[in-house]
Image 1 (cartoon, rainbow, N blue to C red):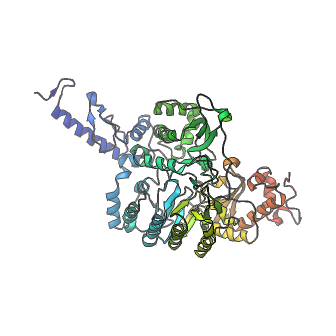
Image 2 (cartoon, rainbow, N blue to C red; image 1 turned 180 degrees about the horizontal axis):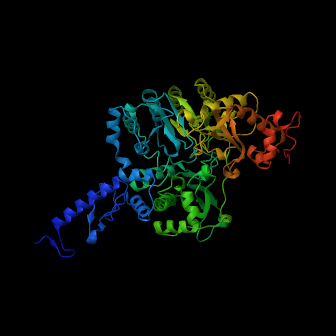
Length: 622
């Protein structure tokens, strides 16, 4: 039989030659950041079968959505940003051999490889530290005590001897040398812990309520959904093709918020009562879908009007991510988040695209048909609290701005195994819970926590203190946020006696990793001119909140040297205590004041009063 193909006039040998030529051309162009000419949506180096007129046929590659989005940008006359060009030229998920080779040579990554290494969870954080930071993936923030002890071992033997709890209920290990990067990754794998996709343009650690399954107030457990979403991401390669980072959170209505309203996708449990049920929505627990949260850009996730059954959440999230992969900006990193697609398209168009991707309509239900649970307990993540399991309690441990030594981690693992059920639950408030403690063991647990140099008391300023890494470990940060947070805590605890929760968030730059806009008091680091010098300082915001007190903080003071921050915060807190309404939160108090009145209360008396003693008379008391 002749090998001549009558349909296109090419012999099999000719087609084989053209396939190889097209693939080689695509690889060469991809390395230079140019569009692929063959019409293939495959990644560089992928095998492409050409049909009539050179079009690609056969099963699509996992990278198809990303490459097609890049192609559309380039064919439209736009220039890919350097990160997109880097991803186009080299698959960041297949760099293990390169990581090993560099480790053997004692080399850190250079240029765009610094960005690509983040796909493996390795962050080269120079010039702040000439070292790697490794970020993990712990769905829902839950980790077994033996795994926690294993991470402590990594920190002790391969890192700086400590680990940080992040604002996504996750762990980071720092001060990893160039030779030790592969050993960190392989040891994590042996512990059953994943680091892949924990940085760069990926879906970050999936969060939920840290008290899932033990909370008397929750409407539904959310940890199973966080894990399901986590494993979906790991097993669907296209989920790594985003134009920018992405956050997903599930909130089951428990006492400790997952901060779902600050995420790109937020799932908030609601209850449809019998008297509100109808044909399209039966009684029971659903999840309200919200989209576009990014508080660093002063935006919370907005309600879509969509209610989802629990089993519908992960498929819908996957459809949303795929639409975002196709539509997100590949040329401007500052506009590459989901919020900007929603701002450009509007919610109706975006949800229509999601329905097309999903293959069925979404369930729209008016807000008068459902209700939320009892609300957040802002001290629910610290101190002792009863569980839904009779006779069992969880204890929230106060960590100094999320940091623990390896020895403290070993001690916490011992406490969880001896007095609990061997589980540690991390929270978005940079602390952790030890659950399933018997009432009779609570004194021993408290003593053991204190013996580690840690706290459990909810009344402390530091129980609501959140701080990003700061310039001790991040090149973007302008100030030492963790160091300053501890100085601030010590200063305030000796001068202000708090009987209401206060959240103080310190973030090192405009990226707002510590979400300073949602703190009662939010500090954004900046350099401040003092005489001829530039010193570390902050912009100070007030009145932020989340959940039922959702709101973006207002800028109160610009560019204050850090030395001026503790006394200013002290004055504001004392003014709040003197003029608040009964049981009023600081956030509510700050919002009903004018900025002028708050500034007068926060500024030094010599500046605002010219010798007067009535610094706070302009504050509203009712």
